[in-house]
Image 1 (cartoon, rainbow, N blue to C red):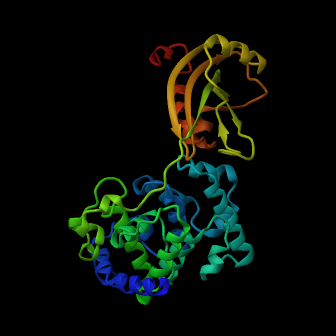
Image 2 (image 1 turned 180 degrees about the vertical axis):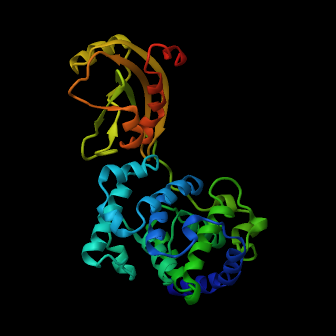
Image 3 (image 1 turned 30 degrees about the vertical axis):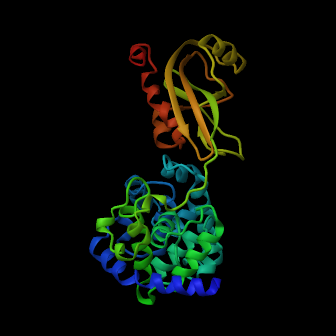
Amino acid sequence: MQDIQNIEMQDFLKDMVEPLLSWYQANKRDLPWRKNTDPYRVWVSEIMLQQTRVEAVRPYFENFIKKLPNVQCLAEVPEEELLKLWEGLGYYSRVRNMKKAAQKICDCFSGAFPQSYEEILSLPGIGQYTAGAIASIAFNQPNPAVDGNVLRVICRITEDGRELSNPELKKSVTEQLRKIYPKEHAGDFTQALMELGAVICVPNGSPKCADCPVQFMCRAFYSGSQMNFPVAAKKKARKIQKKTILLLCCKDKVAIRKRDEGGLLEGLWEFPNLEGFYSEGELETILKEMRVEFGKAVFCGEKKHIFTHIEWHMQGFLAFCKNESSQFTWVTKEQLNEEFALPAAFQKFKKYIAFADNDSVAQIQ
């Protein structure tokens, strides 16, 4: 019975191929990574686009490709320079894995990007979605790239009520799509599905059904149930952590430190910070224990930063220090801007360093 259902669904989905390809050719966005199908460019763009908006990725992609135009350059770039290029995109493990993958390509594939789906999948940091995207877009192979956008499109077209977290949903959609992939236009079909989910069958708000090239076969459209699909799994409440961020300034330098290996934001630079909220009086005692003497501390307000499962509630203090404690690395503002990658959570307080002189402190208040 299951095989019969799969065959019926495969035959049903075939009807979307031609209208979707025609729509894509006429309406696709002009994006920098679509200028050619070089596998390196496809790979960089797909990694950057994970959990990041297209418009935010544009300048990062162009700068990354300019500085690191090929696999060899990526394999050899110093980590600090690499992380600085990625600063603001978040999920830094992605770019670290990219460097590991580039090194493997150089070591095991003589610097040439592997072409088979299995070999691409063997690279660090590349899962089924990214491997499918590279194999189909760069090498025109019928390997689907199924992400949240594609699942949303297919779930609405077929009124599939399985939860997104159900591994069988992604598996079955991948197999059904693989069987209908157009051999001569595999890359275009992959991008057409992505494009449809990004600009028509959108994740937030009502889908733009009037402009949809496959409206004629969408079961959710005809039953008016578009907003019921896909069925999202219930989200767990994020754990809230309170932090006090310390902007320690001594003359023309500011204190930073590296986070411990393992855990959130591992090995990245950060402003010194404390678990919990503290008053200015309490900070004086704590900073003395850190061997930091300061003359004044100014409250910089409160910020919030959301990670996947954790939410940081932060308050910041700008402290004018009389000495450079050996517990920290002290850098100039120029070095902080040009050489050291600072995660987005700490970027929220970076602007206050500009007020690190007695004449401009009042502007913080």
